[in-house]
Image (cartoon, rainbow, N blue to C red; front, side):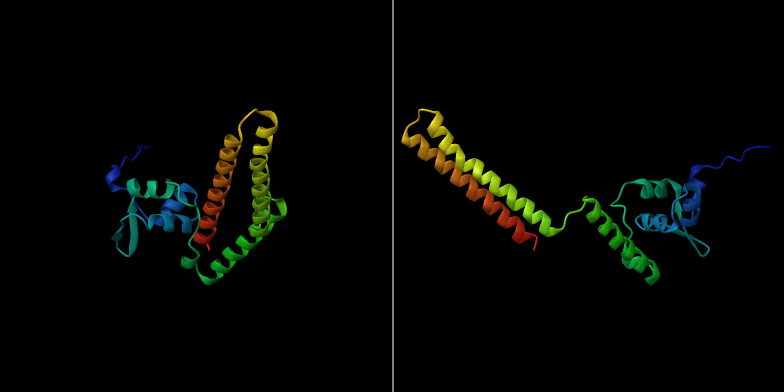
Length: 159
């Protein structure tokens, strides 16, 4: 039996062919192939292997666009997402906004306590003038204000 060798320029595949050969969900192949040019062969949309393979294998965010799914598939997608979120919350890999806010507030308070104790520590353990202590206090106050302002901007920008 003689093997048939075809030039790569003749390799035009449908999304289904990519799916079958690569053993990947046809919807994922079709969505990935939307980003590369295609041509029509009869009534079928085909992509060249040289352009189709990178489109499928170049990493993307890995999600399907729910807007492009049928209503049943979209419902299944959102149900699966809800269940994934519940599971991640139960296992502790996903925190609610309230938990993040609470942890952040606690961390900021501890940071503030550490910074404000620096002046007392320096005053107690080092022989420095009142001028130096005043400068240390000003630097700490400025750092706390800048940190608070930065976080205020981040929170306002994300609302």
